[in-house]
Image (cartoon, rainbow, N blue to C red; front, top):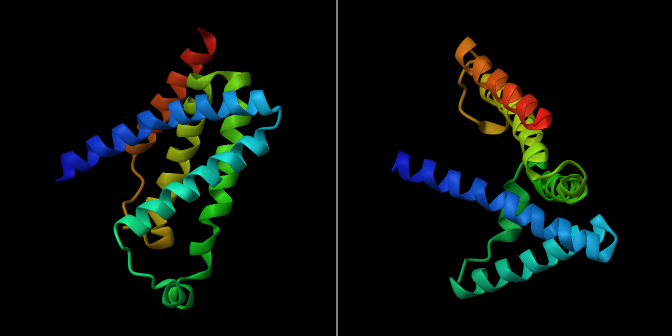
Amino acid sequence: MRYFLMILALVAGCLLPIQASINAKLGTFLKAPVMAALVNFIVGFFILLIVIIGIRTPNNIMLAIKEAPAYAWIGGLLGCIYVTSIIFLVPRLGAALSFGLIIAGQMIFSLALDHFGMFGVPVQPVNWARIAGVLLIFAGILLIQKF
């Protein structure tokens, strides 16, 4: 099961540069990265609504609102910042450099999330091997930027 999840994560990662390139093209066409991000979320909203209706997901949103911690509701805000940033960055830096830097940022903060067990993530202490992995990502970014 773990290998299936790892492959799923890899495939999901492959989709991000495709989404970024398409959204960046839309942002160029609309001459407004924020409008392209809005279109992205509107389309996503309707697709998820169709899926929710199609699989008959139980509607327990009122219970969820009462029980969810306050920080659980900022995911949409973070998604807006992320998608809008991608739309702005890809045409200016290219997909490889943009995602290299994004992945480096994700890995740095992921180490902190793991180390401190923030937001309910299982604790996995930072060690030299993990730090070396992040440093190798930065080495890759330097190579991508140079060549």
